[in-house]
Length: 388
View 1 (cartoon, rainbow, N blue to C red):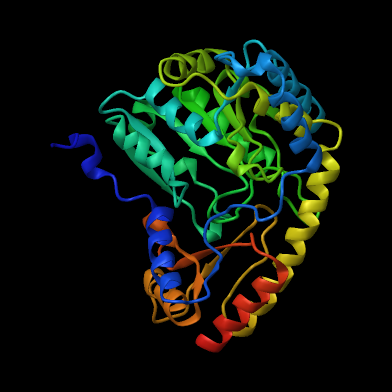
View 2 (cartoon, one colour):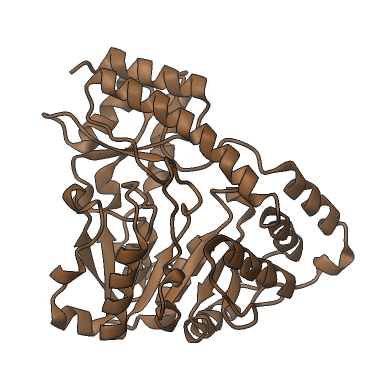
């Protein structure tokens, strides 16, 4: 059998490869502590689980869901956006339910990118932006995220001829993997750039609820005129510990959502209505207090990890957003070498920065998605393995 040529340029999915290495060591009896994948370790709120139990028992939810999402879920997203961001959305035209934001981010590329088109992709970045651009026959143009620029892309560096050919600009703040954050002023510049060159701005807002020390992550749709050029992907996965539930929403420009809907209706049949109704419970009046509680937990974990890694001699900074740390590796190591050292000698899984793009070289990403006790143990193991 012959594989399609389009997948020849796609490397194995980063976390699948890390899992293979982790499982091989576990089979040898090694106690592995994973600081790899950003998968919350704490449970979904009890009232959301109870809502799923209740709604799954309703036979009306057992039939095909609405393609664009249940009207009540889309209304709940619109209501939440008004409350959280001060953004007004038409739930019928400017909100679409997703089976997790990953599929929406992938599918919108297929809705806008033809073979030979350019897509502006941050580097480093969540791999889906790049891989689905390649699968669709497009060409990624990488925008370096540098520490000296707060891990924001410098849009002034984009060649005008490249910008004229670009179909999509991807942004993601708070950022995965760098934990960089953005301001409304930065989003305003991005919106102006996309309006000037008629580019669709796709903002992946998966970590917008994870913020610390008084920082408030904005929605790109808060910028006047953003609705003309932007779609934002809001996920319930990380803020409500619902990664396995696969529920999210795309919001923003109605024309872009109609195009996304053409791909989706010809690809999937929507998310289980009972899960959407549970999502309504998550976005209800208890959302802010739950998110605040979770952020206090992640803040304590930041304290432990920053203190522990500083003892090792690593130059780690405390971020204002996300539940990641983006840590420069010691002199004398590549990020892949340091990752292998920690896995094989300390039994600690971290992610090499180059897994997210060439500009990630020299960094590792650490996810704060384990208990404080195990996080402290991981830091102790790293200290025993590496003392700079």
